Image (spheres, rainbow, N blue to C red):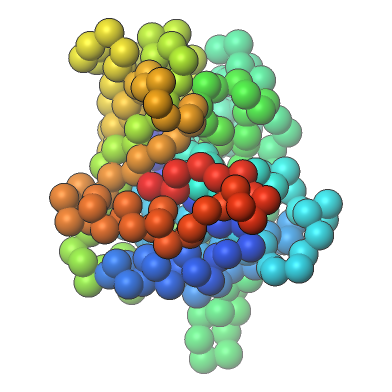
Length: 252
């Protein structure tokens, strides 16, 4: 359970722009997926984790979409890998957390040669604002062979995984207690007064308190300096979201 499955970037109605940017950065972006609940996505698949670009069709009424798509643009949430969503939900309640009902989701996948298949998964989300700075969910893949496909896991930039995520919170120490419970992790590193680091088996989460930054997830690192620098251009490419009436959070 203490393994990152995927990180979600909410692109709202600008998913084409986001997908094109990541392709220019040298990532293989999967074909568009259409969820059964009305949202759309592209994914970037690595060896054991992935990045999801989540959005909705232009002109789609927000009232017709699930709550998790209606939030501001930017780094939106993280999902942990689980083997059994029913057992996970029971475990979360035993730890004093408030999981929402399990969602059974699917999206059609074109396998080529006229063949189609349904990518199926079960998702547990926690009650909103349960975890400071992030939305945490739990994903059980019913059809993992349709997600972790070798032809999707090779990127011309050489990236094989995501490495760490930074989250700005009011009180890193207090927030870390909730993260440890939500992730069933005991290992915590206090590097300085305003920083706590949580080590997962395949990922690192850094909780910080920086007064000049808005609260929330603000930086995702892929493991190389060049990619980290390139990813900052993604923010600038989206322009001033506030001017368009869309709440803005730093995307990477």
